[in-house]
Structures are given as C-alpha cells and as structure tokens.
Length: 199
Ligand code: VGL
Ligand code: ZN
Image (cartoon, rainbow, N blue to C red; front, side, top):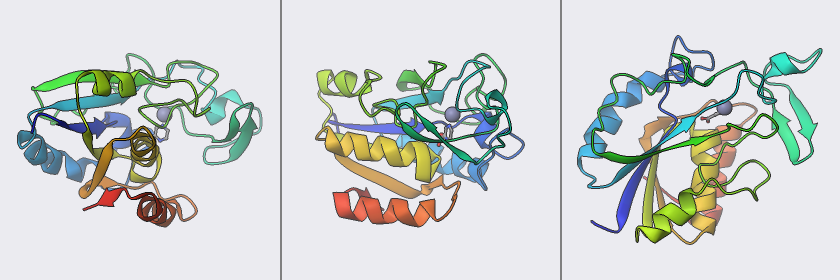
C-alpha cells in the first residue's frame, strides 16, 4: 500500500558472519528480506557509517575492549569493535541483498562524537537523522522494520518510529540479535509495552 514502507536496517557486511561485528546468522536473513521486499512498493535502507576514529570504537579508548560500556556526555555507550568504517568493504550493503526498488539509503553514525543506533535520532535521542521528516513528507504512516541488529539498531529505530506516531511492525524472521546481557528479551518486552507489533 502507498502509505507503507519497509525499512531495511544495516544489512552490511560487517554485521554478517566474517564481518567485524558479526551477528549470529546475520546473512541467513538476506533471502528472507529479499522475498519480503518484493511485497513492498516502497523500501528504504539504512547504513551504519562511521569515521575510522569513531568514539563508539573500543580502540579509541585506553584500556577498553569491545562490549564494555562507558559514559558519554549523552549517556551510556557500549563500545564496539571497529566496524562499518566509511568506504570500507565492511560498510558496504550485503552483495546478495536484492532491493533495486529501494528509494532511499540513509547513513547514520557519521559524527565522531556520537553513535546512532536509531535510524531516526542519534544516541542523544535529540539529533534527528532526517528520516522521520522524510517519511512524513512522503505520506507514509506505517513502517515495517527488518535487518540488523534486532536488539540495537532495529530496536531503537522501532521505538523512535512509534514515538513519532508511525504504526510499527518488526518481522522477527527477518532480523537477528546481538544479544548482550539479555538485550534480545528486553527488546521483546519493550515492544510489547509500546505497542510495537512483532510478527
Ligand atoms: C549496530 C552496534 C553498533 C546495529 C550498529 O546495526 O545494530 N549495533 N553499530
Ligand atoms: Zn555502528
């Protein structure tokens, strides 16, 4: 339908097996997403896109290793292995993702000082990426989310979309979790509380 859009989150090499921040089974969902995308007239993609010295990288902090949490001016920040560096092969969209009709690719996380899990707002929950305005201006009211990772970028994108007033659905067979410290379960609970539909 013309008021619905599929948003495919961060289907990039670095989040797939062999990548720098591989999500278990991340590549298994590529054919699932390809099938689903054929059922949508409108599709947008997101792309995690970090400078090589991004402050979400553990390598930028003395004595820190990936998956530790630090406090940034905007709140807690999990530290990650270097990933999705601007222009790298790891940052490229998975080569088997087949969505030639995608109408937008929105990049996020390109400012060194701040990470952006959500496709709508950076991790300060204030700085917009522009996606919310784009979707509203195009007249979309229903957003379906798939991709990686369920408990990070898909989660925060879904929550922000709901907060912005969109009807939000996440398709569980077309997403996979990183699952740090129970984050996948927390994500399912949060969706239930907020009225985000998980199918
Ligand atoms: C993501 C951690 C860091 C994601 C991106 O796409 O879920 N997770 N950068
Ligand atoms: Zn990232």
